[in-house]
Image 1 (cartoon, rainbow, N blue to C red):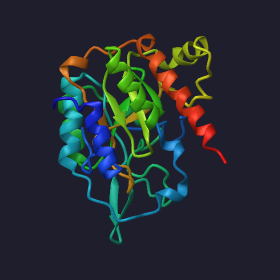
Image 2 (tube, rainbow, N blue to C red):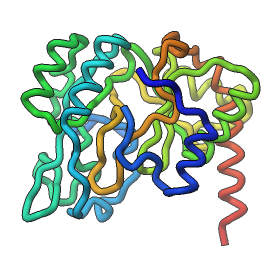
Image 3 (cartoon, one colour):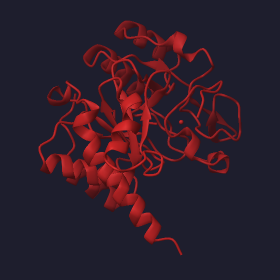
Image 4 (cartoon, rainbow, N blue to C red):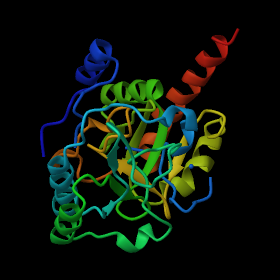
Length: 266
C-alpha cells in the first residue's frame, strides 16, 4: 500500500481542483433495494445521473485494488455494476438511463452471494468484468461512519491533533467521508451520539453495518468523479479503532457543520 495522504495534502488538492485526485485513488442508506444498499446512493437526485462524457475507468486499477483489499487487508469484496459506452457516452450497466449511482452499485439483489475474501477469486471476477465497481460489504471486517465532507475534514484534523487512532477514510464524489471502524459501530452510533447530546439523524451522521456495502476506491461514479482515499490503508492503521474512540470528534464536527448550515439559510 502507498504511504498515507495527510489531511493537509488532500485539503490542498481540494482547494486547487475542487475534486481531489482526478484519477481517483485505491467510496459510497433506507431499506435495501434490488440494487442493495450502497452508502451515498440515495443522496444524488436521478437528474444528476444523466449520461455524460467522462474519462474511461481503468479496469487494471480496479482489479489490482480489489485483489489488494482481499489479500493485504483481508476485506471481503464484491464486483458491482460498471460503466458502458453508449453512443459516445458512458452509462450504467444496469440499463437504467436515470441511474442514481451509475457504475457503482450492486448488480442485483443477490449481490451478497458474490462476495469473496479470496485474492485469486477477486482476480478472476475482475478479469471477467475489468470495469466492475468495487463494493466493500460492511458489518464484516469493518463498519463505516458516514459524515459530510466538511465535517470529516474537521474531525480528521481534530483527531490528528489529539493523537487519536483512526482507520482508513474514503471521500466520495457526493462530498461525503466514510471512516472505517470495527464492526458493530453502526448499531452503537445513534446511542453514543445521544449520550453526547445530539441525534445522529439531526447532525447527518450515518452508520453502515451488516447487510450494506460501501464503494471502494478507485471506483468512478458516473461523470461525478472517483471515490478516493482521504486516509489510505497502511500498516499503521491495520487495527481499526472502536466506535467509542472516534464518535466524539465525529459528532462534534457534524454538529458544528449542521449549526453552520442553519446560519447560512436565508
